[in-house]
Image (cartoon, rainbow, N blue to C red; front, side):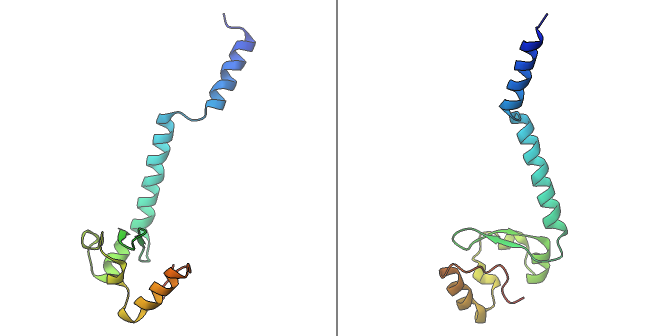
Length: 105
């Protein structure tokens, strides 16, 4: 029979080890599912770009707004979706480190 001290030590070790790999994987899948749900149900266009300003995320509202399926938008330059008159402003803001979270809205 295990002593009380040994059981307490095992409990402390389990707590200090943190979540298991399978628990972390499940948590990640749930977070991803929530994100997919948020992006799909958002009423606003959401576009995310990589460091080269190429589209990596284009939600359903963006598809409607720009009349462009996400399959065509992904990998394209963000400039494709910025009105010509605002492209230089966007470029300058990006070069100056300013946020361009919302352009033209």
